[in-house]
Image (cartoon, rainbow, N blue to C red; front, side, top):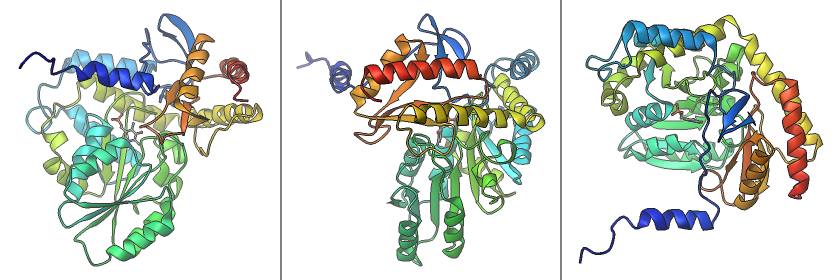
Length: 395
Ligand SMILES: *Cc1c(COP(=O)(O)O)cnc(C)c1O
C-alpha cells in the first residue's frame, strides 16, 4: 500500500506517445516571431507561425503596448465583471464591431475562452448543435460543456447538413449550426452561403469561428463572412487576435443584444481575469493598422500564390487549401516528424501535425507564408523543401 507512484503515468504516457511518433517536440524562439528568427539557438526561416500579417513584432503594436503599460499598469486587477473593465477593453469592443460591420462584440482572453464560454450558453438541454467534422478543438470542447444533443456532418457536406436539419425539424427548442470559416488544418473555406441559406430555411442559429479567416479573407481582412457577402446573415462571428492580428484574445460579434447577453452568461468571461492593458492596446492598434493599410492583406496573398505555385511545381501534395495555410501532405506521422526535423537542420522551421490534431494517416507539415516574408526568403525555403523532399523520397 502506498508504494506505487500514483503519477507514474506521466512518464509512461509520454513514452508511449514517443514510440508512436505522436509526441510534441517544443521548439524555443529566442526573440520575436519574424520571418527569420532564432529557434533553439540558430537563425532559421519561420514558416509555421500564425502571424499572417507579420503584426506580432510591428513597431506600432509594440508602441501601443508600452504606452498602455505606462498608463494602466501590467495587469487589469480583476475579472471584467468586477473591476477589470478598463476604457481600453470597451474601446476595443467598439473597434471590433466597427471592423466587422457588426452591432456589438465581446472580447475574451482567448479565442478558446470565447468558444468555451459562448457555445456552452447558446445551447442546452432540448437543443441541438450541428457541427462540421473538422471543426476546431475549442469548438468541440465548447460543445462538450453543454447538455445539448449534437450531430456531426461530413466535412463541408451541406446535403448531409440539410438531411440533419430535416430530421430535427420541430423536435428541438433551438438548433445551432457551427463551422470554422477557414479550416485550420486544411485551409479550405466553409460553404457559408449554403449553410446560411439552410439555417434561414430551418430557423437555425449560425456560428462561424473565423480564427483563420480574419485578416486573410474579405475586404481588408474582414473575414470569411465578408468574403461571401454574408454580413448580417450569420448570427455570431467568433474570431481571435492570436493569428493574423498578431496579439492574443478572442471575441464574438453579432447583433446589438449579443454583447450584453454573452457577458451575462459566459463563465469564461465572468470568472477569469481580463486581458492586461498592453494586450488590449496592441489589439486596438492591430485593427487600426489594418483599417489604414489593407494592402498588407494583398501582400500576404501575393506571397501565398508565389509559394504554393513553387511547391506544387516541385511535385508536393499541398492538399485542398484555398488560403495561406499550406499543408504538405505526408501520410504517416513518422514521415512528417522526419521531414520537419530535416528541414530544421537545413534552417527552415515548420511543424509536423499528426493524430489527434488530424486523422491517422493524414499527417503533414503545416506551413504558412506571411505578409512579412519576401521572395528571397521564400526562394531559400523552397530550395530546402526540394532538398529534403528528394532526400526522403517524398518528391
Ligand atoms: C486558434 C484557433 C482558435 C483558438 O484561438 P485562440 O485565440 O488562440 O485561443 C479557435 N478556433 C480556431 C479555428 C483556431 O484556429
